[in-house]
Image (cartoon, rainbow, N blue to C red):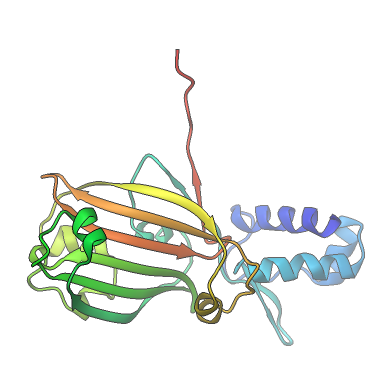
Amino acid sequence: MLYKKVMQDLRSRINSDELEVGDTLPTEKALSEHYGVSRVTIRNAIDELVKLGLVAKRQGAGTTIIGKTVVGSLLTLKSTNEYFSSTNTTLEYKIDEFSLIDPDEELVRLLKVEKTEKVYFIRRFKLLNGKPSVYEESYMPASLYPRMNVMSLEGSKYRYLEEELGLDIDGASQDFEAILPSESMCRILDIDPSTPLLQVLSIGLLKDGRVFEYTKLVSLPGTMSYKHYLKRGE
């Protein structure tokens, strides 16, 4: 579809150095003349960018860029805060639940803990420029974090582990999958049931081999992008 091509070109321009967060896109009329298409096509393209969380329509102020797609490498483990530190995106954390639970059999296996050990359950949202864009559920062995509290989680989790607790993070095993949102996720992220989401399941390891977390991240399309160079074997 023609509007998809326009949307993809605008998305590339937004994610480049040509435009910054806070900039206003040209008017529908100007974009229509630039691309040689109808204003309806431009309107449909911009609606797609709104769904991706890259722009917002504001009455009397035009269409404003509110985010960029952050590209990460699959070769390096980074926190969300580290990914967005090089952009003008404002990142906030909203803690929805922080509790101690008894692990079920799956958590015992994934976290390599005993059935009698307690596990922290954390549910939080990451807001990009004020909009809920990343949903996170984490399970962390309580024995590793004797001083953890809600305030510990109102920022980068990796920074807290490394700088506050002095833990040495080795890396993480991660599985990526495209999923469709549940009813509750649609309400939380204010999206349509047909909107595809990126889900990342991550098991984090310390350098001494201990598992420090099992985390599920679900992000809106257009929020995160990962690139990886695969070299062909001999």
